[in-house]
Length: 210
Image 1 (tube, rainbow, N blue to C red):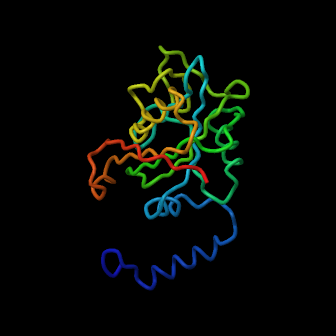
Image 2: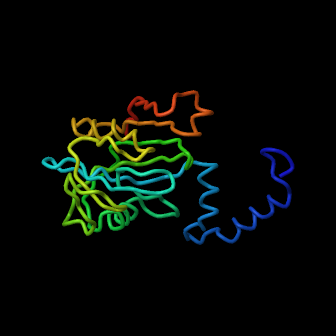
């Protein structure tokens, strides 16, 4: 790079070449390129708020380079596809069974963290069958991918998913039915440019559907 924030002609040519090779293919981006994209733009996601009146909400255990903890099952939209297809793929990969979802998202969650900036469309869902993943009891120690029902958000939520404490509380109180409320969290190095304290969660005004 010629200076900070400015690309050289050679670097710009490389980017143009990559775009030319991928244009119209609909394929998933290679990991290094996908990681680059997440640094410069928001990443769209689909998250499933799997809820049962008696058991609560179904969360999955995540353990990776960014931390460990319980998280809302979700899936990154890496290429062009309908949201309905992504919901189906997310349920299959994260839960191992089909789900029935609300017609539209009941909340939007945006997170600024060390991964980048993500925007998640949260869909209320119910299981259609038994999960193929291990569903733990309260006393069992979790492994990556295991599931467990919670009546309220656990203390050991995944670091970047602390914002879901507010989302799940609103879900349990039946407040995620009208409009699409926006929940925001700034955490980690993303806070430096956001003028907010690490871990602070803000709930903005509802976004009314058109």
